[in-house]
Amino acid sequence: MNARISSIALLTVALSYTALAQQSPMRPGNWEVTMKMSMQGMDMPPMKHTRCVTAEMLKDPQASIPQGPGSNDCKMTDYKLSGSTATYKMTCTKPTLTNITGEMKYSGDSTYTGTIQMETSGQTMSMTMDGKWVGECPK
Image 1 (spheres, rainbow, N blue to C red):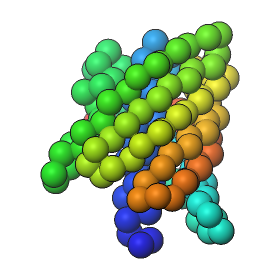
Image 2: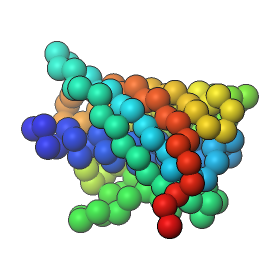
Image 3: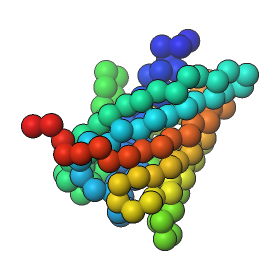
Image 4: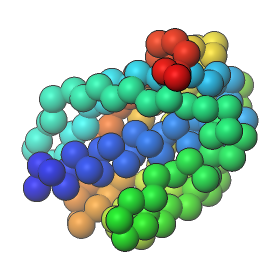
């Protein structure tokens, strides 16, 4: 079960980049995200993940959703950016993730905080994220 939760968590981090990229003040480069996930009676230890976010990904964020074995079929809807806060909804069919709602708050172009709520296999999960720009992408 921990492997499945970790996979879902990493997918969700990748999806958060997609949400952040749409019309955001986010800049290309290496982003480090610290994420904490909890679900009914279980808190996972914080996880750190670093990912290169390219200018191309910022231009077409839907294309940056990872496509793994079996294809991750995720669709974002209701994206809104108001001031420094972005909100969105998302649904994925592989793996099945429903009722995903997210909110990201930017502090300039190099940091953000966020929350994501989702349902999978009848369980509700929530995540908090802190992201920061850590430099240029490695070449």
